[in-house]
Image 1 (tube, one colour):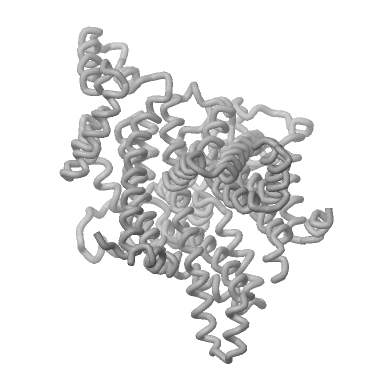
Image 2: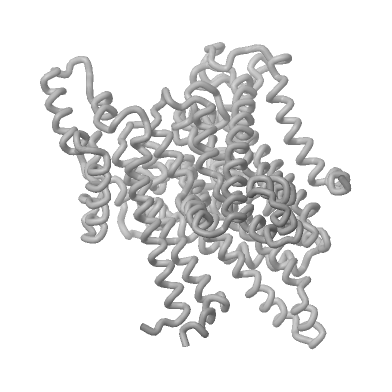
Length: 346
Length: 281
């Protein structure tokens, strides 16, 4: 079969990410079982109250043991877990993929499903806007230097090193509680119920401001720092000197530099996504934002382990998808990948 | 040596160095000056700062100033411990993979990439949760943080080892019959040291950060007051909404100071150690 280098790259990435997904699913099974207690003991410890009839308790334990296949060997349990998870994903049957929450006797997806849009709604726009703006500002700082850079650089360094949740705490305290400019908690006012009405949507946007800013500042800072040093390096290279000697316009040179500095920036983004998303989940806790991060927090408090496990898998999958998209962008933009191995294929 | 004199002439390095080691000294020496228990109920809940309770009390009536000092100390301890583990793991894996190449390198690179892509916080949450509250001492928390955060370092060290192994002095050592271990230790590792030191600083920051993160989730160590634990308590007691700034702002400021000073130390070292960037200044 004849494939262009880009297609080849695309398929090799697809396989790599599918393999990673499989590892992630297995880890999701293995990691929670590293500890001394198995899930059935954990639930029983939670359910058992002094007044509970021992017979009923025993019966419940039996039922849970069957449900979790505790009596089967570990590798069989793992196989069944992987099978159900993948089958659930393929058939889009999320209840099969994630099972039930045993603390509330509801399918896990009933918790994850409503939480996921809030998290994605917070993370995707901040990531995209923060990335673009951060790169433009970073390139500008490198090109202009001077006062702009002197102010801009330490500020970006500050925002990229401060933990997300600290930025969130400062913003909540200053703008939410002291000045009362923006709501400090939740994603919408308690008196409103979700709908597409103007009052509701504008209220959601109003509540969105502070969590958005908290993540946005950190993202912009990080991207700008990277882009600035990349651009400084590119501006000193021979091709820029050559272009200057040829009398290329400033705009032309900035475009060259921007393009060349962009690639390592994308690679950096791919490497940092896992860290960034993890940190951003904590912001939700500070703001009591009803996303997956807050779901983690409550399910840890309530010891609701299937919800925690499913949340972990969902977050990992989202990060994998985001990484895959970045990898594909790199493939499209990087001429070395786009035209590499042309000779082999011919 | 010349590089170190240059380093201490760099104002941003100097300031961040003084801030960080000032905090380390405070964390080490405070018991000489401040007596008090971080866990005893000494006052009423949510007392505002007074001369007696410099930073007020929390929901349990515990002295926040004392708690903060203990928190600083344990967070620094986690940073040092987890940072060391992560750096050592990253350096060993990176050096072996980069120098040996072949199948071993492929396996290690794949492992490294897996740890980079899969969010470390998620892995930390799952492991910490499965250990149960009784299984999470400060040391155990440090170890699991170190064991999940090494991939960055491994990736960078591998790239360096890969380019270093082409150098003449390495080939010379090979011709002289030195074994793999001694070549890695004597001919490769010394050339990566300045990078490794910078990586260690970042890994310390990561250790402090990750501890604060899982503590905020409610999965921190059970046996110590850490900065993350203070934030978690404040969150649980809804101190944020009530505006009791003393129970969360000082802890958040300390975490921020630790992170910022370590970061600035790292970047200013980079401008000195990396000739490519130095030229531009």
